[in-house]
Amino acid sequence: MRVAIVGVGAVGGLFAGYLAHAGHSVVAVGRPTVVAAIRSAGLHLTGVHEGTYHVEAREDVPSDGAVDAVLLTVKTFDLPAAARAVALARSHPAPLLLPQNGLGVERSAADALSSGGWTDPGEWTVRAVLSVPATLVRPGVVRQAGTGEILLPEPARAGAAGPRIELLRDLLRDSGLSVRTVPAIEREVWRKAIVNAAINPVTAVLGVANGALADGLARERALALLEEARRVASAQGHRFDEPEVIGDFDRIVRSTAANRSSMLQDVDRGRPTEIDAISGEILRRGAAHGLDLPATRAIVVELGRRLAGGAGSPQLS
Ligand code: KPL
Image (cartoon, rainbow, N blue to C red):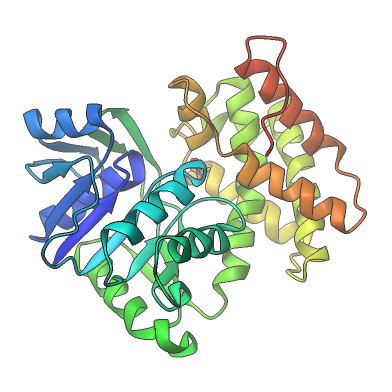
């Protein structure tokens, strides 16, 4: 298959390596620095899977020829612009994977795809929840620190999107990634968002790998965020009990102990973070239900200060 991977950071690079290894024709669409790195030295995967792949790299979404699928692996803050670029470049829609962290991703992608000319974008987009720990070591080099899986919606329950889910499921699975389909992907999006709301901002503020949240004050701080996010999820109709989310949190902290969270990686690189799509969404949705979320409010302010070198403000939209 010919697959465009739009956004070649940690997750996009991971997918590009696995797909290229399985013999697919990968078109890596990224920023100039990433494109230059891949053109000169190839795309390199290290850690769980080792290999160098000489994939096609370019800065614009291919409009020519057939692309069987698009993996939209940009961060949430780049999603509207990237989705619109995909729609503008391709008048014929293709199955499009959305593996971002955070809440409200499908709506944001659908709005951008519609504005770029796709009709019925919901029939082409496939929400995914990803728990494979990957780190962008430098442009074109990705380290996979552990194993994890990709959750997709069950095709039989997805109406017109069903065949597109099947195509993406088979593509990822046949490339060696662990894929599981679930009856209610929205619930899994929330489950992941609750854990991200706890792990990502605390690791970003403290500058520590995920494993540092296994005990002590860092764990207490993260658990306060976890509980607030769980309450918001429940208010929105996704009920999780406390032991269940603490179990999810402990399992992910353990299985990704050596990984620096994606938010910490963004802070390290001086890039925008996904705080708005994670904690910002939790705060906005909580406010709509009259919930007070002091720990979440405090960590957003603290991260804003850290990013601004001391004085800053929360970076919520
Ligand atoms: O999703 C992640 C992220 O870093 O964004 C976890 C699971 C916390 C792994 O680091």
